[in-house]
Amino acid sequence: MTDEQSPKTLQHRVDGPQDAPVLVLGPSLGTTWHMWDRQIPDLTRQWRVLRYDLPGHGGAPADPSISTADLADRLLRTLDEAGVERFGYAGCAFGGAIGTQLALRAPQRVASLALVSSAARFGTPDAWRQLGVVVRANGLEQIALSAPERWFAPAFRDVQAAIVDWSVQMARAVDPECYIAACEALAAHDVRAELGLITVPTLVLGGAEDQVTPPADARALVAGIPDARLAVVPGASHLVPVEQPAAVGELLARHFEATWTEQPAVVAVPAQPAPVVPAPVPAAAPVRPVPQHAGGAAAGPDRYAEGDRTRRELLGDAYVDRAAEETEEAAGDFEDFVTRYAWGEVWNRPGLDRRTRSVITLTALVAGGHHTELAAHTKAALRGGLTPAEIEEVLLHTAVYCGVPAATSAFAVARRVIREETRPRG
Figure 1 (cartoon, rainbow, N blue to C red):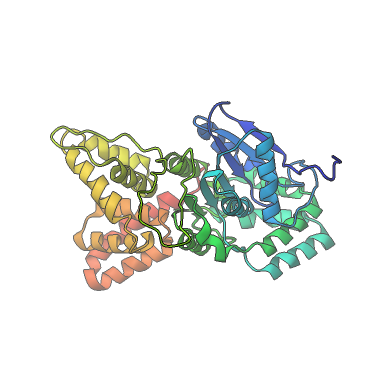
Figure 2: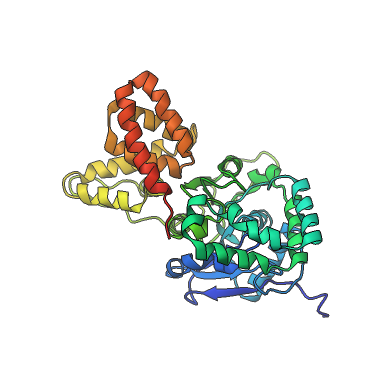
């Protein structure tokens, strides 16, 4: 077989235990696998992490591809050569586009999926093709110099000069022909009509201040993918894994822990009407141990695990762990009830999305004067997709119907939480 006939693969590196399940991390256009460096120490405690570079990025061979589907095939060949059959996948922006192709083309191999700063369609085809024309005429210098403005929130750029400089150098080093080909791939990428075919459990994660793939793109993915959840990181822009490494690492770890299955679920659809027979039970995802509290029965494992996952996604580990410690002896059954019923059932009902539930919850807490819970649920609203401006709009509306004094106190609580959640973190 000649070199031209050989299946193309992608430059990659692997970290973590040899016998651990494999988690693949995909980069954004103009970046290298190093964009995930700060998640590696935590993720490799549980997974063997494979990171790859796009063609012409990070010193990878300049072998252009004008299709996200082709790049998904190249990644599958890379995994074949590495002896990896089933894997979890998290991709940022362009890497997320490759992830949707993997979920559509090889769902039996993808154990769980995370789409970070991604979209079903990125902007317009004309804009990407015009960008390719600019790069062909002028090179990548101006694209590289403007990368920090697209990738990072202003507050982050102000205090992280070294990372800003690193991002410019990383983008500047990309092979121009491969960048142009990637622009063509993004121009052609449009999976809006196919989102309903994705059967892989999916986390859609974005930055609240992202102007490249704004939260509206994330919400469109969640609306289209049947088994998808949304997490929005406050104070972050497009390269949210670089801006908020701890928050992203925590969200990814929790998602993959909760949804990973060793075997894909198979759903058989008969071609003709047939007698109803019991279907085989699919392999269950790992669940947290069910707590046993003195004086009461344990919650059902599925309901409790689902509630615990939702509660931690929205309120964070620290809040949930602190609540559990404070009520462990005095009110363990109540803590169990809250996790199982409020978070496991009500927050996960399909009738309303999380944004709407957050609006209702904030309004009710303002009306009741429950400021401690209001602080927690302001944080939950930010993580669930509401912007700071939308939260303030909700509180302004409550001033009309709940009274100005109540809303004034609520504004003070909410603004404090928003400042804490959106401040830059190193």
